[in-house]
Image (cartoon, rainbow, N blue to C red; front, side, top):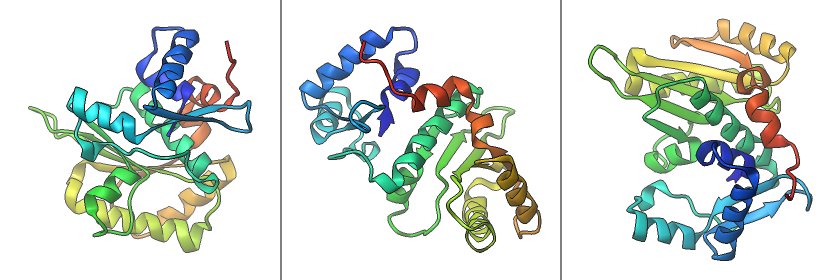
Length: 223
């Protein structure tokens, strides 16, 4: 699920909002995209329908394993977190990370097929090249709803232990949270944890920046 502003940032940077709105209207009318306006007149969110997935497989050669069709927007309890992951993915791309793959948690869960119980919210991978060992950046988005000592720190320890054998020395973890006080508290707690992987704790708002977050969270004009 993406907001319309996120969709524009990913695929329609050089055209106007009106062009994007017309494209979305056509795709919704044909049944390839689902859409909902939050609180009726707020941000428009979009998702791929089963018909849209079939179209991409049949006419664009996209692997069905890479598609996640849905019947509706994500549940209310997951809404803010899902939108934040989209914001962060955009921010990583805008910051110039050489990424051959950006895998959200739901893609990793499907790939692991139940063989693991901890996943990063976003895993960004850059394959090795001549003279470049590649990189793996695991991103966690914390919106302040989990206790630091009893939940967040143990989960981060498990995440590092799970990813390290796959990624080796190329792995780093970025934990994004809300507020300077919580960032400082998490950073202090993680310094005492048993984590051998390089880890940085930053504020979500500072990392994503106004260029991404403000456009993805404010109500859109109907044009």
